[in-house]
Length: 309
Image 1 (cartoon, helix red, strand yellow):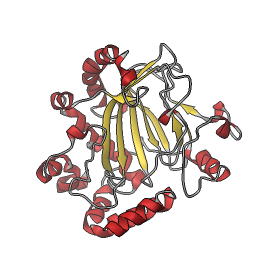
Image 2 (cartoon, rainbow, N blue to C red):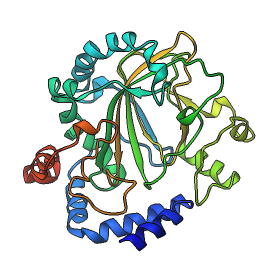
Image 3 (cartoon, rainbow, N blue to C red):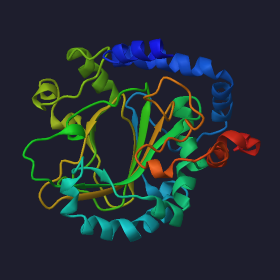
Image 4 (tube, rainbow, N blue to C red):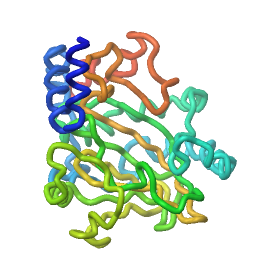
């Protein structure tokens, strides 16, 4: 095991190859689990809401996903005043321009949060795109706010998400978001693939630290900027689409429910873990504490009656 982990650490420099080898290893370590995800995934489909396979995204509204409008209303009750309360304190956090304000108490008060995250309404969109049932990796309510920094940093820079061959994130705005509020902004997957070739990112995808690099080939007109009223919702393949966000202007503020799905929830680990179906890395206090709790949450993998959904 130590030898493989050491090899994987060296290979991580070539992130794409590392992702492929890690996936094969995890599938081989538990093929029954993967076959079950493939079988159950065929049961879910929504022809009216699909992530486009070429561009890698879907933009819709909360009203079109069962339960999301009601969930947003409940989240706004605590998220809106907390966002105002943290107007200054956020600047001392590790990631001051984008950080999670959700805690375990919030989740316990709003059981619909994880319920929706694993609901058929979500799986009907994700399963056809993945070809199987993906795992829930991260969950949070993120506040994006202006900082005193004069330069972009971290995920404010254009980048691709690594360590898994397919990440899909759902961003659902809890506040109205305009151009000054740090909207999610991205280059569709087909154009992003062309950019990766032009910038030597075939085997690895380091972030673009300076916008001038992508502006050699594209303009703002090529980007998709997700703005709109509360409830505006986007599903984005963040491993294929170059993207950035949280570039808030001085008076800008963004609140968003973010659900992050991946082929393997614990996507940065080589080894299969008991609870890998539900990582919830952004809020570790929400992770299941035992296998029974994990099984109860991952109902869509365990209830055969859902096979006919």
